[in-house]
Image (cartoon, rainbow, N blue to C red):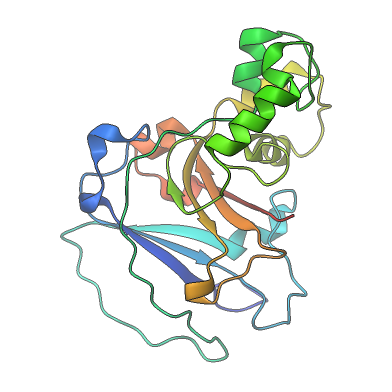
Length: 227
């Protein structure tokens, strides 16, 4: 529930035991289920938005972890919400790449360059950017790895939100904070599930590695982007 707004929609579940743990770069539980919920605008025709920069809206997106031995009961969809069609998904292992203006790449090739912008290095050349796009030209659904951001790196969005938007992009604290978050999951718009996030956008949940190791999924941060 998001107090004052209503229940969240169920977006996806992940069976942790079914994932290839040795191939992931995130420390997920060996078993159990991760459940993702989001206030998708069904109840108010999209008036209330869940935004990383708006702390009052953070309750509009949640991650719950259900241990394998935890007893659960099936519940009906809350009144006023239309459930999304169930679409079973399989997983495959793939390489991911991040943008050249991600803090980690920038710090390797051009320390001190403006955060989130191109800088004077071949990794920012149009030829390299075109090749990078061909390598990973679809957002897709994803667990771990580098997020496929529709706009600026989602790690920067989360860092700005955590720091209350009080630091500029040339402040080293923003870069340091952005480097402290990893992708937990991203969910693309999905025709088969009748899911459309803005203009063919995606939902992202990120988490700090320490919170992930301690299974503090309530500390995951959410953002979304669209074209």
